[in-house]
Amino acid sequence: MKTKFFRSILVLAVLLVAIVPTVLADNGTDSSALREAVTLDGVRAHQAALQTVANNNGGTRVAGTLGHDQSAEYVFDLLDAAGYNVSYQPFTFPFFQELTPAELEQTAPGALTYTYGVDFLTMDYSGSGDVTAAVQAVDLLLPPTGGSTSGCEGDFTEVGSGTTLPSVISFPTQLARMTLPASRRATSR
Image (tube, rainbow, N blue to C red; front, side):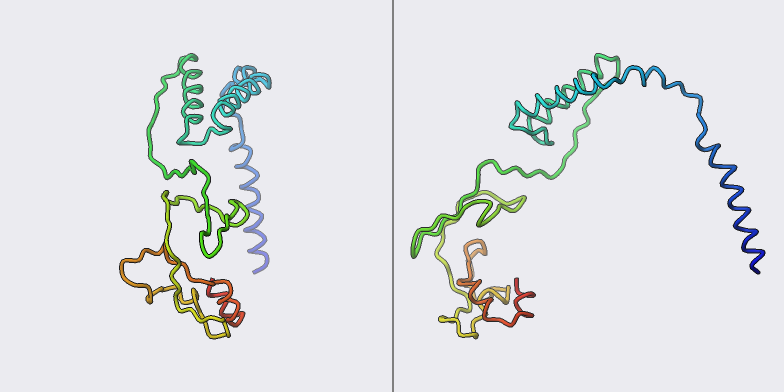
């Protein structure tokens, strides 16, 4: 039994040794012209040109921006000048760009302005707009004596009809969550 196994392994090894050099063999294509044409200075010149495009467009060439369009035009023009038959192929893709910094303020009972990047962040693909609404308490018990689960259920069935969730805030959510057992807090966030 062992002899058969080792014989099979030996045959496989011999086949691999015979096949691999054939697979890796030169296919007869002469790439010397390409290797001589691509130089470090040439690569660096294209990198510099594309960096200039980025610098002129707020530091970006990301798809969906003018920097991307100008980058595509740069490559298109180079290939066209080299004799290639070049065309653009339009396609759609999801895109999100925050055009203005988000703001978050508390207006009552005391004014408080939150700092973007420290106190809150914008979620990708967020809609735009201005939401100003009164806070609506949901399942709130004050003072929090261990019985309030405000914001922990997650279904907000107590909220009246016609109320949109972006304007509904359970208050004080952090305080209420601290009154739950640790195992419940982990699943309530």
